[in-house]
Amino acid sequence: MATLAPTAAPANNVDDASLVYHVNLLLIALVALFIVIKLPRAFALFGTKSEWLNGHILRYIPYRPSRRGVQAIHSAYPPPDSKEYSSNDSHTLYTHARHAQRLAENGAPVAMYFPPHVPSCIKPLRPLLTPLRSRISPGFSVAQLLLLIIYFYALVYAGFYRSNIFTDTARTGWIAVAQMPLVYAFAQKNNVLGSLLGYGYEKLNFLHRFAGRMVIIAANIHSLHYFFKWSLEGTFKQSMKRPNAIWGLIALLCLDALAFFSTAYWRKKAYNLFLSTHVISLIIVLPATYKHKPTVLPYILACVGIYLFDRLFRVIKSRITIAHIRPLPRA
Image (cartoon, rainbow, N blue to C red):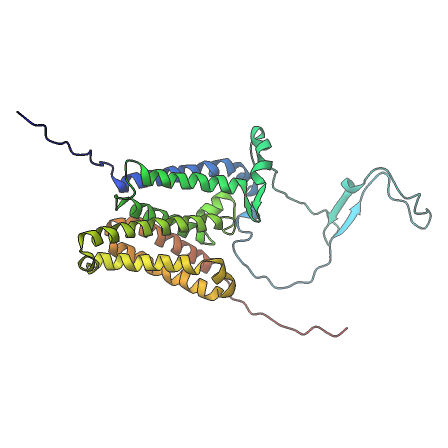
């Protein structure tokens, strides 16, 4: 009598690197959508030539004392002379502000150029602005919460799609590495995403913190997988002697040091320690990650490029000048 051979469980044929890469493309597409929505306001802002350099390049010009600008009112109904009329008689029902002009030193009118006003969103969506801008906590709005929820579930999808997070040792490692460029991008003061979105780095810092937490959680899960697997096999000591395992442990220690010294306690009590561990760990973690897994080189180069771009712009925007300090005369 023939017996049926037991069938093996279907293998996971998903390429972890490719899946995480496509999830990152989805996140980039969402950011690109926000950039397109913001484009009309960018065109309005940069429609004037002066706005291209204002606030970016520090420049020095010799100090020249100038007279304050004056205002002239040209109206068919000039204000009454206070010598001839009482206070009550000089009051009018209509404002004459539209007749006021700003004059230069030579008396010529000063031409004022203001960027055109562009609404922050299209008219059908304006009723949603008030609930989205309402604060959940100081500095944190409903819109920010929704953005983090979308980001979180994108990473959850990347971690659980056709995978068992308790047995798949590689997926969480790819997730951690793939989010590192976002952590570096939102940490820089001169980042392209902030410029395209029209927000300063301090407004995007909540994304830097959240992405950093996701990287640290994914990296620790990735490491615990191997620690548990090697412990069950009884090969923990032998496995940890391999060069790629040593470099992986170094990268993990750097990330955990970042998490520990980034808490509110260290930021408030020892900010210099927080800053030093941030800089040192973020520099060491890149070569350590590459030595641990050389195939992640594109993500490492992206982090290096983002960091160097920020440093380059800081050098371009920096100026050295001489400060003259003079004591104020006594009154």
